[in-house]
Length: 110
Image 1 (cartoon, rainbow, N blue to C red):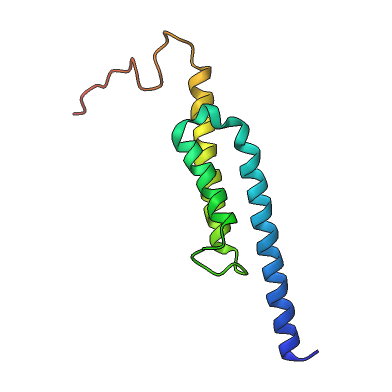
Image 2: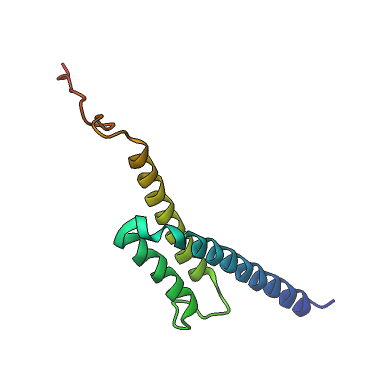
């Protein structure tokens, strides 16, 4: 095989891998849709914004390069995951009990 053929194979494999990564992340974002009612406005904006950015053809990078789409989807997943963890921690806390920072008194240093 010539050098040009190898280059085309490597570029093709890279493009296929980034496309698969973008699809996997998009599926994970879509699966979080059932939690949107409990995550508030910020969660809804992150969810719909990430999907819109991925679907619409206007991107920072051209569509054969899915790295920007992967970045947006990954950031949305991180943000949504943090919101879910905060929501679950708030639900585990019993009413009337002080939170992690409430009820603590600080002693002066020195």
